[in-house]
Length: 159
Picture 1 (cartoon, rainbow, N blue to C red):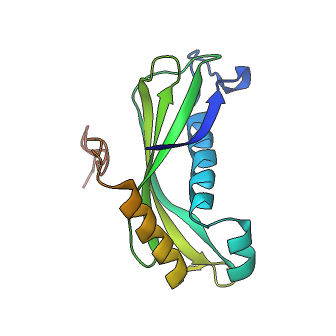
Picture 2: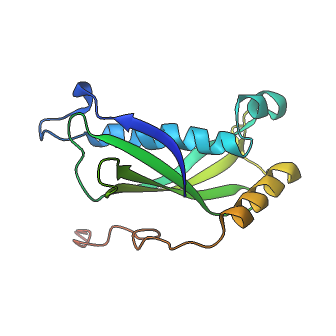
C-alpha cells in the first residue's frame, strides 16, 4: 500500500454528530485518487495531450470508525483491476495516531473521450503503465468490504 494523501479534520468538516461529515471523507478520497492517477500518468498533461480523462462511474464508501476534530489521517490507494475502458481501485483511510482503518472507498473509473463525453478505450501506453503498477504492487489481501453491496434491510417494493 502506498500513501497518496494526508489530512487533518478541519472545524468546518465536523457535522452535528461531532464527527467528520461523509462529504469530507469523499473529498479526502478524491484528492488521494487524483494523486494516485497522476502516479501512473492520468494527469493534466494526459488530459491536454489526449483529450481523454476518467470519470467516476461508481463508488462505494464503507465507514468503519469515526474521525473527529483535529484527527490526522492518511489515505493509501491500490489498483484492484482494469480493462481497456475501466479502472477499479480502492482507497483506505487510516487514523494516523493509531493506524486504525476508518474508511474504505471502492471506485470504478471510466476512461472517457472529453469531446464525445463517452467511454472509450485507453491508449496502449496507459494500459502498459497499469500492467506495470499491478505487477509492482503484487498480491495483497482484499478487505471484506470490497465488492459488497447494500443488501439489508430488503428494498421495499409495493408491487
